[in-house]
Length: 181
Image 1 (cartoon, rainbow, N blue to C red):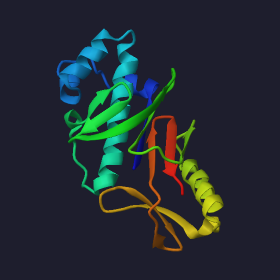
Image 2 (cartoon, one colour; image 1 turned 120 degrees about the vertical axis):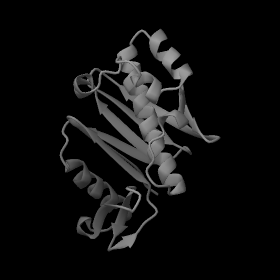
Image 3 (cartoon, rainbow, N blue to C red; image 1 turned 30 degrees about the horizontal axis):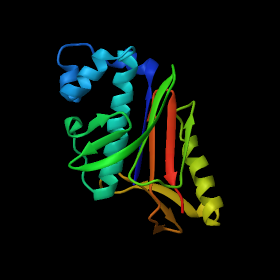
Image 4 (cartoon, rainbow, N blue to C red; image 1 turned 60 degrees about the vertical axis):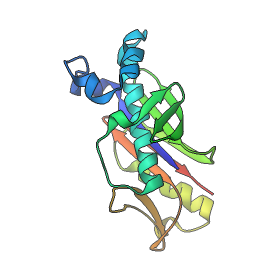
C-alpha cells in the first residue's frame, strides 16, 4: 500500500500558525512535539511530520478500506517510519524551501512518484500516460475516480484495477505516487 502528501510551505506559513496555543498538541504526540522544539528548523519539521502523517493516513485507509477519520495522534512518527495500531509504514520524504513531500508504503514496491509545480489536474493526465504505457492500453480507456471512502482508484475500460495510487495537492504543488505491476 502507498500514500503520498505534499505541503506548499509558503502557503502553510500563511494558512497555519502552528505556534498558536494548542495547535501542536492537537496534531502531534508529546515525543513529536519534543522533536519539533529540539529541531534546528522547527517550521520545516512541523510540515515534514504533518506530511508523514497524511501520507500514512492515505496508505492505511487504502490498506484497510476504512472511512475518513481525523485522528492525527494515532499516527506516530519516527525518523523513517510511521506507526498506527501496530502497523508500520516506511517513509520517503523530500523537503526543500518550497515543499515537503512524503511517500508512505508498506512494502518495497515498484512505485513511481512525481511532483508538479502547479495545482492543476495536469498530474492526472501524466498519470494516465504512465498507466497506459505500462499496461499497454489506450489512454482514453483509463479513468481515475474515488471510491465511497475517497480513496482514488484506476479503472481501465470501466473495470476496477488493484493498482495502488495516491495523489495530493496543496497551494502551488500537486503530486502522485503509483505502484505499477
